[in-house]
Image (cartoon, rainbow, N blue to C red; front, side, top):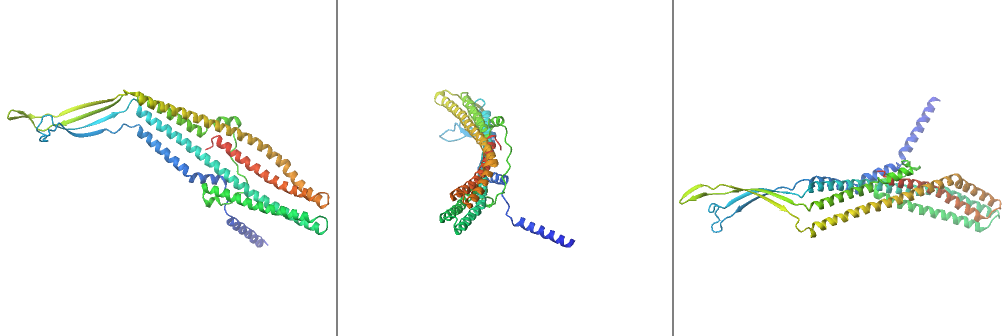
Length: 423
């Protein structure tokens, strides 16, 4: 007896293991988000932009390379001799340009602000991708679960056809009722086809982010659990720290630095050079050669003076001020848009919460009871068949609408998490 029990247990374990291995893996929402973020070319592009700006910030703060020069000076054109004339020189040296004011520091600071703005855009782009994938995943979940609801209710419509045919055979109804029941069943079948089309379209959109291998996987049967929402007051505070607004703040700082850089252009710039002139030959003292000609050293100082600023420096400063104002307006516009979205999503969240309670406690159970009562009344000759059809259709729509409310709650929560700056 004990051996038989052990064999039964082993057999059951083997069956369960085989069933687990034969079932395809499901695509959890968190897994879909990770895959999308890991393979998004948008994020890779922004990463490279950030690296480029960070490297450019270092380069922008460095002095320009010195200029080395080599040349011949005062060469007589009759002989081109380097020893004939006392002033002939082979000159070589170096020159270094010094930028105006604090231009180097400001240029580096500007690039750093631009890099910070790109980092915030990177975070916002990642959050946007997560929101997009969540909505697509929830769309697939909605249509998949809707297909199950319709398939389950299809048996009820088939049963309705059987009832009308039985009552017709017993002379208790009319052929019209049978035809009406068959028509409603055909409509349900057509709806199943439409739902499969919606599933295919949603999976095709998800393929853009995950690839066909993962986008074609089945989904879990339960809705995912998302991060709890913050309180309304906290949401308002977090909205002001949104990555998109932080990117605007960094862009404004970069443009303010560019204004300061344009103001530095009113200051003089300098170029300092030093040269060494090598001379050949000797001084002549009659027919007797004198001492060797001495070499010469020279110093140069160039000054870049903004003598005519009206057509250049003034215009450059005006352009940077206009860009600064435009970036401030962009931040104000983005804040208004995000604030409007937050207010809308909060209103939708409250509405969906009330609807979810109403459907769960009243509409779904009442619709189910009404459907049972209508078919009983019809069989007893106390109700018209159209009332039965209406009850069945409303019961189906109530179940689907209840599912949609629950899915929309997850979508709204995902939108609110994006607005609070979840990254």
